[in-house]
Length: 241
Image 1 (cartoon, rainbow, N blue to C red):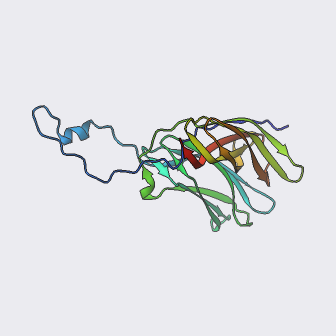
Image 2 (image 1 turned 180 degrees about the horizontal axis):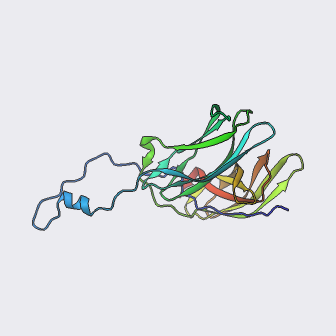
Image 3 (image 1 turned 90 degrees about the vertical axis):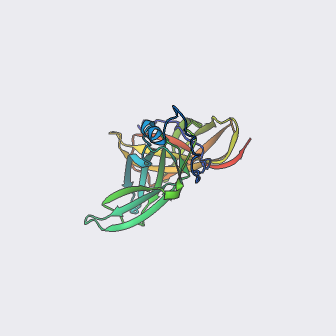
């Protein structure tokens, strides 16, 4: 019997990153006791390097040769990452590329961690799969702090008996002033050792601030798994009150 685990993920509001200022700082008036610019620089805390990190990932290949993967990404930088991209590259036993796919996310605030599950490949089964993260140089922007936005409850796996599994449950918005057109819900599958073996993503539609709605994430070519977890991240904002 499969053990079912459901987790609500901390997610940050997409598309609300503030633009970086392009102007110069105001000059400080000189005077007795006033710190110099060099002293300010010495006293300032060092800025964190802007980077995304893969904190966990895994994959499997279905009977048709397609890759089903799950990946967890964390923003370890001091700024928000707008439209980060996941590149999924399949290679054969000789290290030659047999497939290349990309998935663009909405945004990650500093210290935010998100998950994505998806399909990659072209029907040629790879021997290895590599994950690469990238962010456009102009897409590192000042951002609000990360906050909890959604709560995921009651997730269960409904096996259709026809080679598909529907991962269903409810999602509640913890927001008080923002309605969402779409919230991405990603299901991450793990084996008995806790390793990721695949993942799938679907969308909860029309989630108003403070409201609860249901979701259904379709899994196909599902590998053998023991546990799974559900992660949520904002996708399309409807309105802010």
